[in-house]
Length: 387
Image 1 (tube, rainbow, N blue to C red):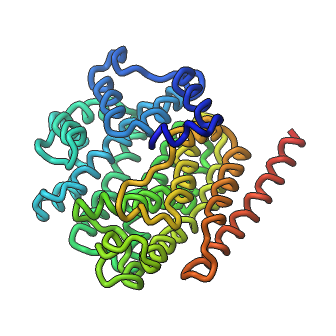
Image 2 (cartoon, one colour):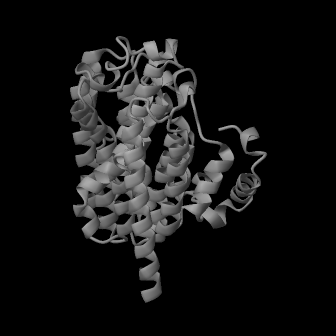
């Protein structure tokens, strides 16, 4: 996310400066791993900063009663994901680790060396005994939820080690295992902590969509990175309509067939957008709302950036740093999030090349989302008037 691209946009530069120098007031009082008395927990927060800067900020600003829980939930699933992503790991070994990983969280002293495709992931697994120590200090109700999600995710990942993503149904199932379950688990954790209502725990379909929206956005954006790592998460049912070989898109990025496939994948991700807004409407805790909303607005902005953008096939496309800062600062209410959705769908609408494959489907999705957003803003305005 280049800062240079934001220089000519005063609002974005102002947001960057405000976020940089007023971060504690804007995001929330961050926990500092250096002053946490529990050495295991200190390691977890320090590692959180290394493995995910974006999630580290929003996790740290959560209420005290749930921030440590979500930090550990994220690290445990990040460790599991690191095993799945290591393409040098023998298949049988990988499957065994994925299926049995949830049990390791109760095995004091367990750790794993030389596994992970990045140094920070290898370090996490090599020091996993510290994560276990912090996990075992959590309330049992949180341990049970995290363990259940970890078991389901590990088994799902293992199923797909040997199975390719052929159909759109396969694609949805894979994304459910690696991301939808995260949304479901977070809902259960928030409800268990009582900072959110019990109703949230029952909204599994919406929580699943929250995860799918983020995961599918990442999968579309990360085409080149995954191709370089010999990974392919695009469903064969979609990409074979446009090319006989998956790598063909990188060889002919500007071809109509390549762009049409990309836009098909973006349309599929956009189909989850209104579910995400429905989920956000349920939230009552301001910090939980921001935690959930910030990744969602980043996702819709990323889809606006990658739509009809042939650079996806040749480089890692990201949104401008200034825009990211602006989104982070703005995503503090359902009204503001809806406005961001409207702004980004307008960007997508402006990039539609009518008459090309999937253009009609994109237009219909945008029309549906705009109608939804208009209604949502009207409802929010009426609620505000009553209050």
